[in-house]
Structures are given as structure tokens and as C-alpha cells.
Amino acid sequence: MEQSDIWRLSATELTALTRNGDLSAEETVQSSLDRMHEVNPALNAVVEDLGAEALERARALDNSRAQGEPTGPLHGVPVTIKINVDQRGHATTNGVIALKDVIAPDDAPIVANLQNAGAIVIGRTNTPEFSFRADTDNPLHGRTYNPWGDHISPGGSSGGAGAAVMAGIGALAHGNDIGGSLRFPAAANGAVTVKPGLGRVPAWNPSQKAERGLLAQSMSVQGLITRSAADLHLSMPSLITADPRDPFHVPMPWRGEAVKEPIKVAFTKNTFGYALHPEVEKALDTAREALVDAGYHVEEIDPPDVFECGRNGYRALMGEVLTMMKGDIEAAGSQTIRDVFDVYFQEFPPILETDLLRMMAQRSYYAREWSLFLQDYPLVLSPFLPQPFFRPDRDTEGAEGVHEVLGCAVYSYAMNFLGLPAACVPSRLADLPLGQQPINVQIAAQRWREDLAVDAALVIEERIGQMAPALWNKMDKTE
Image 1 (cartoon, rainbow, N blue to C red):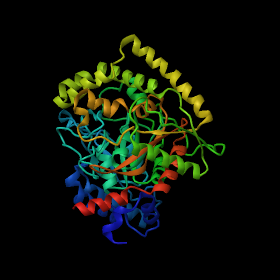
Image 2: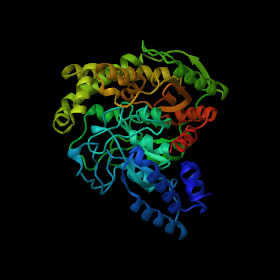
Image 3: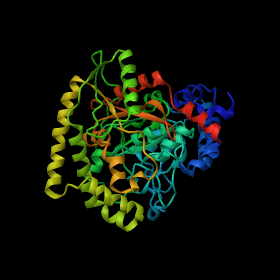
């Protein structure tokens, strides 16, 4: 294989070569860095280039392997880390100018787990201010662009991660998700992800000065964005390795017990009054057909009220944000992010005080209803968004913009409020008036059964193929 093509390999393909010595870690890293230097200037997905230390680590891993030391499951795999998570010696800016000099004293658990598995961090990726937009732009690092074209937002808040991995900058991209921040960028860029359930991946930032609010703790999770569903099966077992710094981590294996077959899938096109775009409907039908042909029993039936659950959950989160973060946003945020939050509070009127406590209690009711439903239907196939992904800065266009970006995304943030896993996988490449655009669907799963969601995503991916080759062909033609 030519050095110039190594960056195209998936993490699964890379480890098959690096662990047996057919490819060195240094070669894999150098190829990814070359790709980053080629395409990142136009994307601004990676905002801190860690090439020098990445090559140093790669050589150290190569030397260790040559001396007969065991290799990790992600040996030599280039990865990126989002700038809102601690990596020793680097700034955890969260896209905020006031935090540009907050240097992490140690690695967050997810960074440690990735590196302990043999992965090599080649750069840190962009996020919006406070990591709280479905688009990615900030005054400190600037805007990230979608490699499919400027007509599509790269998503957020892990927009840099999604754009980077799909453009070929690293085989794995770290991100996190409190209301959709893994799945929005996956949908925007045609990538694959699984939002882990509550407690699955240990999380904590050593640089933080205070603990996060209870809902932020309950709804936010760490994960990965990939080009291939198989790479999630490869990498997630390393991510879920226990870390005592997260006292609420649940130490369970990646693979759960066998589920009675055929696995029943609840299938819904319900968009709660929002218009379902024909291309999204076609993506849903393709996903359903792929699962049926693979032996799943797919039944059209609505799950418990995701609209009420999602809206109330996000309103509760906005209550916590208003109480605990509003001062920081006003003091350190740009006018853009302050305006966006003002409209968030209009779209999702914050639940406060005693009512907030009641809604946090009501969360158990919603979770129980879903738990009972998922006993019969271990998977739920639904839209992710009812419309193709929106344009850049759509959420800055007042109430109508925020309504389109987040108001309709109940299948996204409901899963955070419930603490359930949810995969997001492309199932169609649409030809739209402004250009080609991937369309993703969502697959929610029983608690602790991320593996089932990824299995289903892999079936869908096998039907339509990965989006990356089509994207790279498009990028080659526009250069």
C-alpha cells in the first residue's frame, strides 16, 4: 500500500496491519498527518496540531512492539480529541477565549483509555462555545466547515470531530453528547456513532473547578465518531474501561447476553407535526429493508411518548443551565452565543425550582415506560432529524432557526434524558438542490446494549456502503 493511501484505512483495517508488523505506527500517523495538512486548512476541524508528539509516541510504540511487548487493541490508530476534554499539557478551551490558558494537569479517563489501548492522538478538534450548539463556530478558533460543502453545517458540538474523521484525519474521533453532540455531527457528515448510555464510559475533567449539575452528569456522555460501524465494535471496549475517578461508571462488558431472535425492532416515522422530508423517509425505508433482509422482525409501532419526554427533559436541562451556567455565558461568551441561549430559553422554557425537582423525579417514569417497551422491542428505528441537515448558522436566525435545529430533534435529546444508548448511521446519500448530502437514521437500544445498536448500524451500512469513499471522491474533484 502506498504511504499516501494509509489514511483511508479504517481502525479495524489498521490494527490488523499494525499489530502484526505489516505497517508501523509511525507510517500510520505520518499518513494521517499528511492528510490533515492537506485538507484541514479548508475545514478548520483540527485546531491544535499534535503531529510532533504523535510521531514521537508512534516511534515509541514501534520500538515496544519490536522488543516483543504486547500491543493494545488500538495499536497505532490515529485519533483526535475534542477541545472540551482534558489532555495533559494542552488547553481545554471549550471554544471560549477566557479558557484559552486552562492547561489540563492530567488526561481525562477517555483520553487515558484510548492511549492505554495504543491509540495515538494527532490533534484536537473544534467545538462551539461552551460546547452547546448544534453547529461549530467560536471566536477563539473560528468556524469548522463540512467536507461535503458549505451548504451543510458540520454539526455540533463535536463538529470538528465529525468533519475530521470523515475527511480522513484520523480513523477515530472523540466527541461527547449531552443532547445530540455525537449524533448531530455524525448526521451532518455521514459518519457513524453510538451515544453510549449513562455510566458506560467513564468521564471527568481533572481541570474542572466544580462538579457539573446533576442533569449534566446524567445526560452527558463520552464517545467516538467513526467512518465504519465495525470500528465502534473495535474501539468501544477500550473506552468503557473502568476509571475510579468516575464513581458512577458501570463496569459491564461491551457485549451483552444473546437476545431472543428474531430481534424485534420498533419502527416509527412519527415526527410529531414536523414535516418528514421525502429523502428522510427514503432513508428510513432503506434502513428498515436492510434490517428485515438481515432477519430482524421490524414492526411499525410508536414507542412511548418521545416528544413529551424529550421536550420536558431539555426544558429541565435548560433550567439547570439557567441556574448554573448563565453567569459564565454572560461573562465569557460572545454576543452570538448569548443570543443563541436567549432563544434556547424561548424554545425550551426552563423548568425551575420545585418544578425542576419534580421533573427530575418524573425522569424515572419516562425511563420505566421505555424500559418496559424495550423488553418487547430491544431496538427502535426512527428518524434522527425529520429534515436533511441544516445550513451553517441556522441556529443564529432567531426562533425559527432554533426551532428547526433543536425543536424538532426530540429523538436526539430524549435519549440523553432517558440515559439510553442510540446509534446514528447514514442510510442514504441524497441529491439535493444545493448538493449531495448524507441522511442518517437513529437506532435506540435497551439500556447497556450499545452492542445491539451497533450491530443494526452495521447491517444498514453493509446495505448502502460507507459514505467516506463518495465524500473523498467529491473532495478530490473540488480541489
